[in-house]
Image 1 (cartoon, one colour):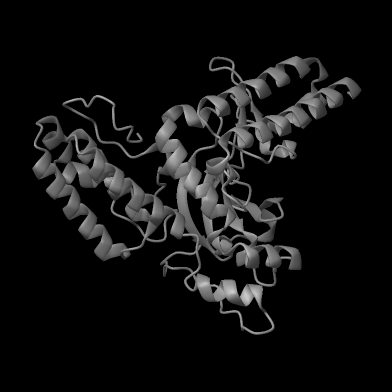
Image 2 (tube, rainbow, N blue to C red):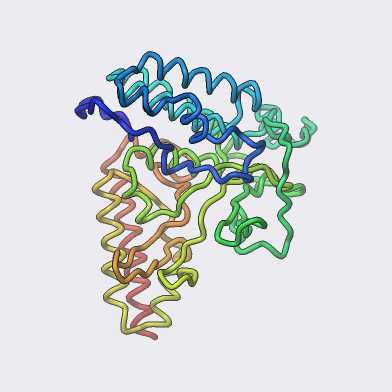
Length: 358
């Protein structure tokens, strides 16, 4: 779906919501007007088919204005309406306009994870002896807050925690630990943030949201062969959360990490290494760089008899740069790929060693 600037445009297009931000009704800050119902009510699909792009654009802008009045101008649910506008621009051949709208949607999507007074909080976090830390408040005032209880916790990392969605056990909600009361970063990380002021906007969920918006739109459906689907942004009692699917095998059981898979099936070692190589080739082909290869739990073996087994990466926040320390990927792309390949080979050796022991 990304604008490549050169792709031939078809005269007729079908408007659909983007696969990376499919919205589950009831998981939102507010109940946004259903996009598909809005499209039908405003006759936008028929206008597109009749090449009446001007009228389709006016109706789409009308739908966006209505949603903005109901949700507020900075609400992440507006992303689906911006996507609709961008698709109409593309269908009409206005690639520059489509790109501009997509960028606006990306900013909206990412900024949902920043606290209301992020700059003040950043200073208080760096210099706690001089500044009183303001209460972490979201940029939205949701009508609905999802309560994440301790018994729903399924994973706790250094930066984020993952909880089973209380409304759907097939989904999980990732929340940044910085939003949790009483959690503070280490003095070493404070110094790093002081020396690198661009880290003011770094939040793990925000970075992963960027990947789902930009990379998934660029690659399309193929991205979800190696990534869980993302279902939007919700507000929880622990701060804003990113809703993603819990990866399952064809039989409905939850997919296992690659190290557990090899440990339980030592005869499948070669198959596991082939899946790892397939993932690495996919990343290289699409110019993607992830650095967190040290944790095998981030790589799940999704088994499927007809579509074929795939290795699914459940943590995409390091795509591009590790914690946004420096934009290595943009400055030295060849070195970034070389580093990723080195870490990939280290994981491959670890899995091989594990299989030989088992």
